[in-house]
Amino acid sequence: MAYQIIWSQTAVDDLRQIVEFIALDDAIAAASLAERILSRIERTAKLPFSNRTVPEKAVESIREIIWRPYRIIYQVDDQRDAIHILRVWHAARGVPDLE
Image (cartoon, rainbow, N blue to C red; front, side, top):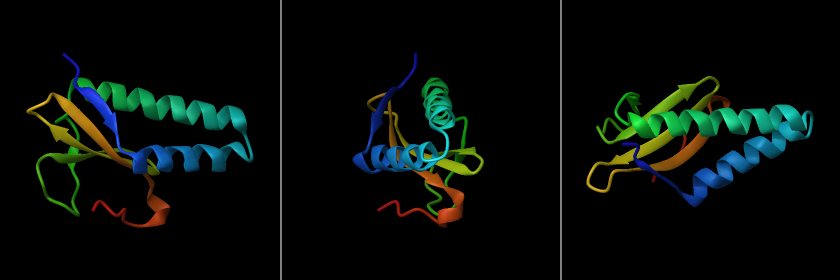
């Protein structure tokens, strides 16, 4: 059974900013990118512990999907069968704030 996906407002804003930036040059590519990111998250909801832990946190429940150049950072809530999407981050922006 897939875990429920819960988005933080910060992650929603991250994804929107990425898509809007890419859409300035190519709206089709922006839509395609958003679709592929959402697809990766959907797959992760089926196997939430299949991705690596975030090295900056070293907490078992905080994990990330590496999809170059993006990091999709989420926290697994095993009690509620949910994953909380915390950030969708472009690696060129440095290390994301997870607080």
